[in-house]
Image (cartoon, rainbow, N blue to C red; front, side):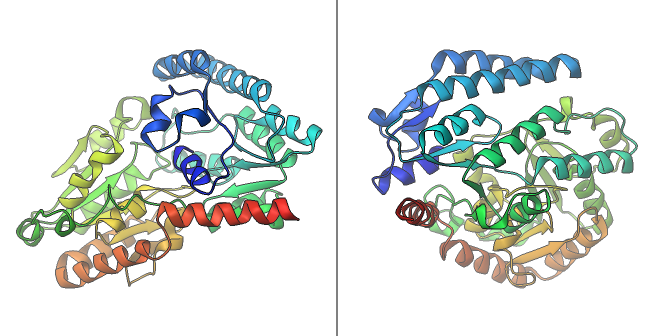
Amino acid sequence: MFDQARELHRHGMLHQFVTDYPVSRPIRFGVPRDRIKSLLATGLLNHGLRRVLGRLRPGLRSSLSRAMHNHFSKRLARVLPDDADFFIGLSSFCREALLHCRERGIKCAVDHGSLHQAEEAVLVRDEAARWGIERFTDECPDWIIAKEDEEFAAADYVFALSTAARDSLVRQGVPPDRVFVNPCGVDFFAFSPADDTGLDMSEAKAGEFRVIQVAGISLRKGTLDLIDAFDRAQLQGASLWFVGAGMESSGLAPIIGRMKTRNVSFLAPVPQFDLRAYYHRSSVFVLASIADGFGMVVPQAMACGLPVIVTENVGARDLVQDGVNGFIVPIRSPQAIAERLRFLFANRNIAMRMGKAARETVRRGFGWVDYGDRLAEFVRQRLAS
């Protein structure tokens, strides 16, 4: 949303950006200070509670999370400027603001980053059953699904990040002519191949094979499938990196403890702009998600020159040409992932060519400027109609 606000400002369209983060955070992304309204007290409460939610029992965690969402939604509606022409709200946080806009004739959209949560919930429950897991933290509460459905009904438009997300929303009743698909961009300054930064990683790339997934440890992100796939691939001397938090709260630690994890490392999450160093030390990027509305890490890895392997339920599959700049595999198919890993391991020159093709793909239409241009044109057309 910070990148979105900056791009709207670049087009002279940002009237106000409302956030519960400190003003300094969106400023770092290029949002001008005089356009930011920070609900800082709300943010201190919400972000403080978020730090402890994972330690609470499920019922209390859901109740507190619901209170946080609703508190922000109501505050947002109260501070929304009446002289706005178009409002964009983040899903599950903007119901009252959307209703406020409808009452005043302000055109409005809800920005939704995932597949429809009802479909994600089914996919995650099925995944838990597949692995024999009774307690897990991935499932979306029913109240969020209901609230987002109210938002979809109240908004003039629904913004989605991928065709997978759009199709999921349409299956759940959102009219297709109200869905605007606009893939996330990537920061080409922050994410570029090693040879663009003066770092020569060619010897390391030639001498090792490292698989990387940047995502939280969870059922939804396909953590278990990738561990299984890496074991099946039997790549001599290769390693697998998971970069992201969640092992303790995921409920997956006992299962992972029973799996073969030789040469598998679980690394702590790192700030977004530090990820490039991890991509530079890797050979192939994988996102094995069961459900993922987009997956910003996919174009980031592609921008760094890595071939990618994604499942059919990863929204960023829209950027992947199977066999050209990466591979698309079915969900819950560790064998398919293993086969693609073996191919890339055995064909390093092809892997490098695919990585270069991945880089060119994101260069042609998937930067943040491209995202902003598409968004601004959409808003202009709707305001003119």
